[in-house]
Image (cartoon, rainbow, N blue to C red; front, side):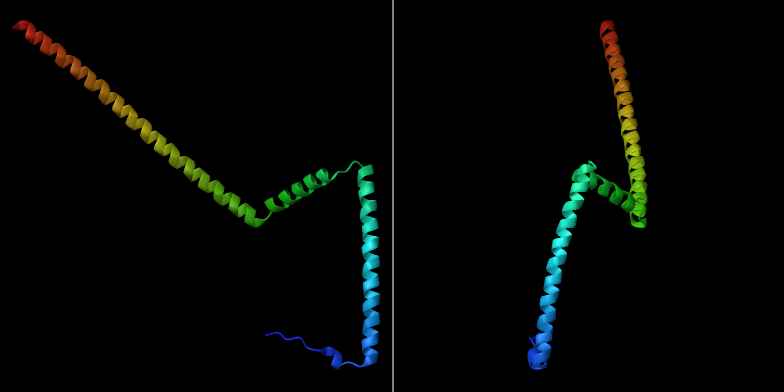
Length: 133
């Protein structure tokens, strides 16, 4: 369990005053730096506008660079290689299934054709034999 420790009892009044002064000085510096940063960001935007650079162009450039950087990582290359290999295997398997189905339909068509021929011959023979009586 974390407890708050009262450090104020451990330091002298003089040190407290020095720390308070340092704190105020740091807060002022931070405020000044924020103002300077805001002014510089505004100036940056103005320059970019004059050069015809827009936020969308920057986003596109950043995306392109990030995409390129990602593609050059070993993890991406390994994943790409694995998925590519899996895709090739899946394509081969689907092709084999398609060939088997086509063969089966061909066999069925052949059998159906043979059945039709045999049925016609049987009908012809019946008709012939019935004509003899």
